[in-house]
Image (cartoon, rainbow, N blue to C red):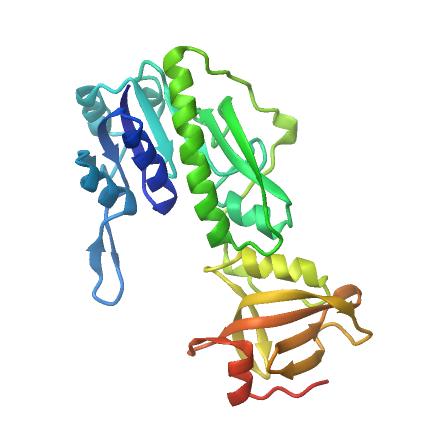
Amino acid sequence: MRILFMGTPDFAVPSLEALAAAGHQLVGAFSQPDKPKNRGMKLQPTPVKVCAQGLGVPVFQPAKLRDGTALETIRQLDPELIVVAAYGRILPQEILDYPQFGCINVHSSLLPKYRGAAPIHWAILNGDQETGVTIMHMALALDAGDIIAQRATPIDPNETVEELHDRLAQLGAQLLVDTVAEIAAGTAGRTPQAEDQVTLAPMLSRALSPMDFTRPARALHDQVRGLIPWPAAVTELGGVRCKILATTVLDETTGKAPGSVIAADKKGLKLACGGGTVLRIDRLQADGGKRLAAADYLRGHPIPVD
């Protein structure tokens, strides 16, 4: 099948690679414009651009989608199907309407749950035990199109956003190849989303970072693993603001007030949390400092036990 791929970040790369490996004719790849990064502010190509160039797929990086230029490019490429994975832009109706088989999207949740920009993060932040990927027809409304296929996967209680992201990227790629084959064969299903079951996954902000130790240890553990690498869960330890990078929910209880330091030793920093639960901080980064095991940090920055 003649396919135009649209994607930008790492999440989209396995889907592009899988379509190429499956033998589809990739007529082009749309990706966001290169952006300056790091101290030198040198323009950095997107992961999808790098992958597409490696596959010999022509790359297009339109600054706008609504001025007719992108549509004209699409007409020249003449795809039968447009596949979108984390492209980062809403497609106008004239682009959605162009391909013979329409436009489909790889989304990292089990829609209609977690429509929006950060579905993987919110699944972990909310302590979900299961998530998955959805292949859907695209519509003008955000992530609201009819569902073609879904595949679920359990979330490990200690899995971080980064780890789950990589698993879902691969799962989405596998499901995408199967779904495109069904579309080509005319056997693909189509199920409208249940609007009364919609939940949203809005963009993250630093407002989510502060840790409230009146919450249970499990909720704080989910906050830590759900906000890596940005904006990260943060708290003050000995008067120093620290990003908390890894924690463990301990199978013990305490009568100390939430936020109290129970122990600060070579095993890490144990803190009292809501409901008498206990959380151990295993890895952290103080403002202006390096990422360290909590035990290593404590050797240079001792914290008294309450």
